[in-house]
Image (tube, one colour):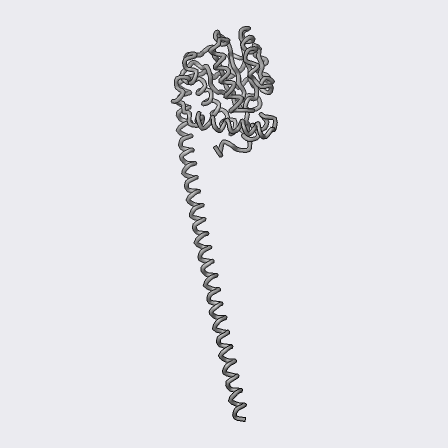
Length: 296
């Protein structure tokens, strides 16, 4: 949680609540509670294989003109349907965690989202509306200020009605980032042709391939596990080093304190001996003086 809750994260929550501390704090606490329950960083490719194994209904690929990772969604290629609603949300969270981590390595904190609604015949159904509300809840409440732009492409007329139904649940800031278009030239305003797939008027020949993507995901997770293990080992070594250093300082402090105490005792004994010597000498002189007086 400490690693996740950095300065950039705190700033995003403050911006999302217009710098009102109480509201931003409540929102952040809500997300921390959600992350403890959902454990988004622990979701693996195997956990969402049922959603990963598809013809390309949702994936991340390429970057927009500002260097932000692009999430592609193609509900017309959905192969699991409403019964797998929980897995759909889990898969979304899995992709968001991957994409935001990738954005961070490029010095970015936002993502771009392209949703191609071609052949999405059931997008305006009641079941899909419930999923959409959950998606909005996850995005707005737990990934605030993460969306750079959202483009709905090839939107049928039914989607306009659907958007009118769910838009009241969308905050004003997010609404300003949403665009509905069927023009490839509009896509090119946000995405360079080298990063835009051929089907949308670009030059990218990328095509979703589950087997290739799966190998890539597994490899990335293995490397991530190694990095996490290495990081944990480094933290353990660091804790041991700090503990050892603290112990050494404590021992040194005790020795120093003991040394000072010993010196004080020696000084006190020396001072006491000196005083006794002076007192004895004084008595001796007095005794001699008394004898001289008596003789006289």
